[in-house]
Length: 385
Ligand SMILES: Cc1ncc(COP(=O)(O)O)c(C=O)c1O
Image 1 (cartoon, rainbow, N blue to C red):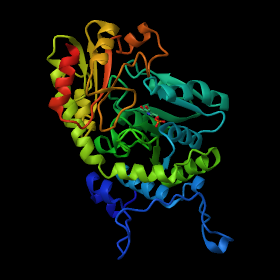
Image 2: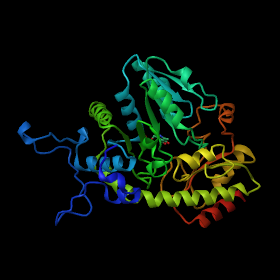
Image 3: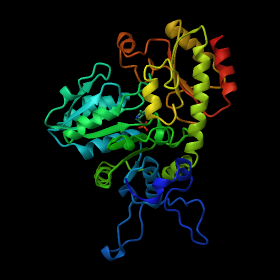
Image 4: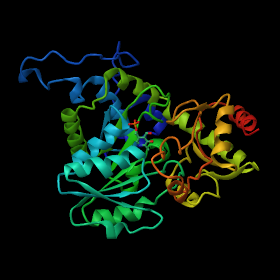
């Protein structure tokens, strides 16, 4: 924790102002875009060498400090994508011979990184199914990282991080959480003892489906190491994208409040429909983790899972009839996006494997936007036909 005055400000205020805006006459209210790769510098007497791959361009620094304030972290580094953030965090935390314990319910590319890429660098992962348990048994003397995602895509299951944090910390293991689906507005991961929080800023932080970006937050020492990795591996955030991301974050809180309200209205509406076998939304009492969600989250989020009777065909038909909501992967933008995990995030699994994870054919994932809820519901109504 930074111990700075920013901790006393709410997320809406921090999103607008950040922590260190210049208040001198003539300073622009909106920070200018410093679209420069390099900066005048001749010798060490000129101070720190600035170079935009180093992450010390003014726009990169500004958006990173705003994200740190929102997460309640000592430091953050904004990077070129969510996967860039995950990869740099794991490179910073592990060496050849180390071991990771991870939830089996992870974003597909994160799973692939852990299952197939890190082993090539001598870092192996044991996956634990949160429904089955066995976290402690999976930990070894060389385990360095415990990696979880919260909430999980697309079932929106919530895992209680608190007992895991206790077990991990007893063994000196760093707990990393990808909290993209919640955003820092709905889930303040670090306040539950999690050490490192990852955001795909492409989603709610950016909020307009127009940037690819990521962020990783934690202690200053950890963020310095993640930044060092980024200087070597190269996924630094372009200054213009950093500026766009900052612009998105200015409205993060109001957008997320609206996503939360709309998603709850839509989830309730779907739950009353005869064509629907099941609705998964942490804000509904029918969700298996509803009580935990009430405890951990400040809002239930904008993501809704709907299982249509009639399987894949019914889902295809529903999607083809949508007029307002857009069929597209990704999430967290102002516009409502709809996708089927069997064609996107879970395409690599068999229908049986998906079914076992609670994602039968007919599962439609909705990223509810900030439109008027009644218009969205009217669109879903005509699409259900
Ligand atoms: C939970 C989660 N984490 C990470 C990522 C990767 O983010 P990016 O596409 O910005 O690399 C995604 C992308 O969909 C995601 O849903």
